Image (cartoon, rainbow, N blue to C red):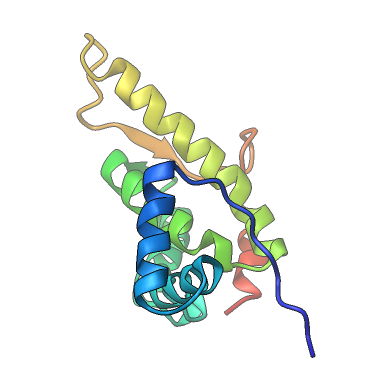
Length: 147
C-alpha cells in the first residue's frame, strides 16, 4: 500500500474544539474528519493551459511583447492575480519563468501605491513588460514551448 503524505498543522483551541465536536458527531477521529474536510474543500485545478483566464493572460503577455512594451497598471494587477492562482499548478520550469514576473509586478504595484497620492500621480501608469535590455525579462521562447 502506498503511504499517503502527512501534514502537521497547529490550530487554535477554538478551532480544535469545533473540529473535535464535528468529528465526534460524524463518528470519526479528528484526523479522519480533517482529511474529509480538506478533500471536500480543496478544488482541483485542471491544466492551466486549458483554463480560459490563464490563456487570456498568456495572450496578453504575447500582445504586450509584439505590439507594445507597456501595460496599464490595472492589467498588471489582474494578470498577477491569475499568475498567482495557477502558479502552484505549473511545472518547475514554468514557475522559474514566472518567478521574476511575480517579483517585478509586485514591485511595480508597490511603486504605484507609493506614488499614487503624490504629485507623481500615475493615472496613465505604464509598465515595461519583459524588455530584454532591462534587468527583468520574460523568456517568451521558453514559455511558447508549452503551447
